[in-house]
Amino acid sequence: MNQISIKENRHTRKTRTAIQNALLSLMSVKPIEKITISELSELADVNRKTFYNHYSSLQDVLLELDEMYLDMLFSSDEINNPDSRFSDTYLFLDNIVTELTTHPDRTKLLFDSGVSTGLTQRLKESLRPYVREMSRNLSLSPVYLTYLLDYIVYGIAAILDEWVHSENQLSKAEMSAMIYALVEISVHGFTDRFNRPNH
Image 1 (cartoon, rainbow, N blue to C red):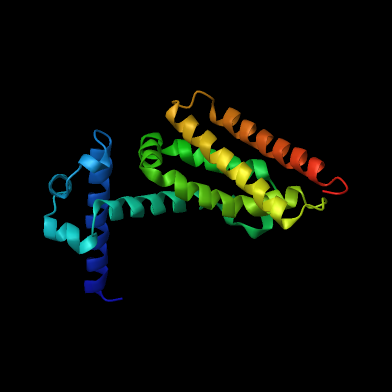
Image 2: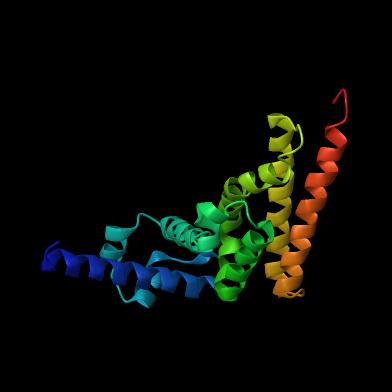
């Protein structure tokens, strides 16, 4: 990559970051529906044309912020290390809870903006092997496994959403322990029930 390309990429990142930070700042005082591109551009110190060179709408900025947040949330070594993928469900959940508390104000803003939808999908994809491993010695059908996973994932997402908005009334350790207990109870209770004969 030549020097001009490096400078252009650096300038592009700087501009996009300024726009993203401006949107987060404005979202802390008003809903996104009431934010205009003009005021966002002014706060980001870019003109409207520059904004449209990078994004087609405020929703595009928000979608990129959501994706960046979720990439950060699910980027820990424990989550992505194949050797430890099934080793510790608690550690997996604790990593998620820890990341949520790293930037609480941004977390709350993005949850309010719809990041919980993406969070639910990422949780489902990431938790599937853990749930399958927890029930590995049981003859749970794929259909039941899918329903069990949906139940667990949507429950976790709802709990995390509530926790983020309740000013973290439970500590990080308490939250991680509670979610893990709910996962274990759900897996074992469900599999005990649906591994009986004739089910």
